[in-house]
Length: 507
Image (cartoon, rainbow, N blue to C red; front, side, top):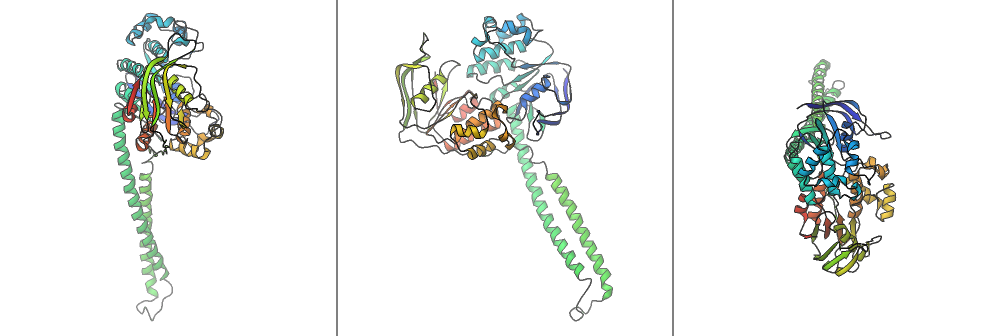
């Protein structure tokens, strides 16, 4: 057991005028299972890359352990994991990797298959097996469950629960609750380390935010009272001062020139009271400042779903889809109905055909640019006539160029797009950048924002929450519960599904 100390760390990307980190100092134990959370763009991956030595920051990182980073780079997808072992982790022994694979419920022969032929889940498990096969390493794990199905996520969760000595970046609340015993949180204006998992941290945060808001209101009321008192005392002092020189002997016979010194002393006392009150106001303002700096204010999103004249929007009857060059169908004998107001989740393992089905539905509905190579070989697929669809693709490859160019390509209102992105906590600084420089989470928010402002009878979202931070996930949950749009979704965030789904279909 030893400590990792980060002292006065400051980092800013070249060409950017806003620092990612500024004078950060924290200490963490190498035996901890540390969950790392924060808004998209706050620097979670950057922080890991600084620890790994891939990026250079001012300040100091002191540690007696070696840092290793997941995911590993794959320069050639035709190579096998066994070929890449010396590149990924030179000190790793093959037998240790095989032991870790066994814990991940994966056969060792996966090491000798081309990496390009492995599924997302197999790649993740192979890399984790290599990652944990060393000694005296502190491991930096960056979003291991993206694109994984529910079974894959559960197996990764069970595996990480048995391990220690890592930082885990994830937006999956179930994973963080199960695997983390400490939380490292990149707040809006600070960085904190707290004992416990995500749920215990969130409960403490809600209490702290409520206390900060109450203290802020108390200070505001006190400042208002003090300002009124200072104004009143100042006016009295001014009025008193004006009576020092010039008076009407008829109206004020008791006054004479000798009273001027008394009036001057009285005025000085009043002015001293004003000065003391102003100093109290300044102290109250200083105590008030910063109270709300770390509060996560989640703006409410709005959605105006269109009502289709048909109740039945999509219906599958004994449907089978097959690619032209395949020997077996992607799936067969699939039947379900999607009616107005339903929120239907497509469930099933990676490769079972969820995305293929979505593409076929989009093609059937006549969505511009929709294409599906698979063909219907049995059964029927019905989509309501003139069905307007709001689609979120799991792939962010089309998010490029400027936001203005993207809005024009998608045919959405540019100003409305920027407004919604601000509500999703994308800073105005990002608006002038090319989207190739965005984080994956920020790109996904662009896809979601453009989908939300597209008039539609149905929202078809394919893994919309990949890379999206936990605060925005809660925001989207609230949006869906408030406006109850008709939806067809693929999503593996179990907590999100439990809160949103009206029904599920297993492929």
